[in-house]
Amino acid sequence: MSLHYEQARFARWVTQLATDEAQTGEALVSGSVTVARGLAAYQNNLRLAWRNALAATFPVMVQLIGEDGFTLSARDYAQAYPSQSGDLNEFGQYFPQFMADYEPLAAYPYLSDVARLEWLWHGAHYAANHTSLRVEDLMAHGAEDWLSAQVRFAPSACLFEANHAAVSIWLAHQAQADLSSLQVHQREFAIVYRPVWRVEVRLIDEAAFVFLQALRAGATFEEAFAMVDEMNLSLDVVALLPVLIDAGIWCDIVWTN
Image (cartoon, rainbow, N blue to C red; front, top):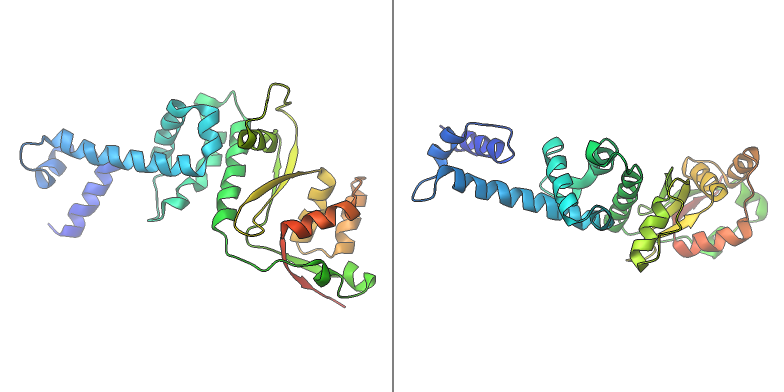
């Protein structure tokens, strides 16, 4: 048998996708260690690596579920979505969706939203560096040209919308705040961004979310303002723009005039 065949068979067994323990053990284990103990060591190491990778990506989820609960969730996730990459930073890609359908924790639907937010944070952390737009860049032309301009979002900038108070829950776990009065079943919006080296999460209102979502889809500033008006929302652009510039969520501007 070829080395490639044996390696593939061993990998299938370690991930519990194959059940030929005896044959695999005879081929790969020798000495005083039993087949079961020898192969179980590899399985345990793999489970631990997957669990630790998920815990590093979803630290708030660990706090919400508890160490034991997260370990069980990670085990079940690994069985449903085995790692397909040599980079374990990519392992948690499907964890938010998994949590949305995870029956043992179905009574806590906000968990999947928290997981989605943590995955965005993770992506922003590893996103490419960028040069942020400055106030001078936005003010380089007159008001009419500015309204007809488009902006390009930075690689690390993300928009987040949830049907639960996932942002407040996440922020509270950064500062150990009191969550006793939190209304869990409330919609929340946020921007996730990395102006320099540290990822930040900031709550925004629905009007700001609609405005930014329109810009991200390619709308001009004027078109984005119109979408906010169509939804009968109130946007304080004078207060919002300095926040967005300081957050560095834009990396380029396109003057269409």
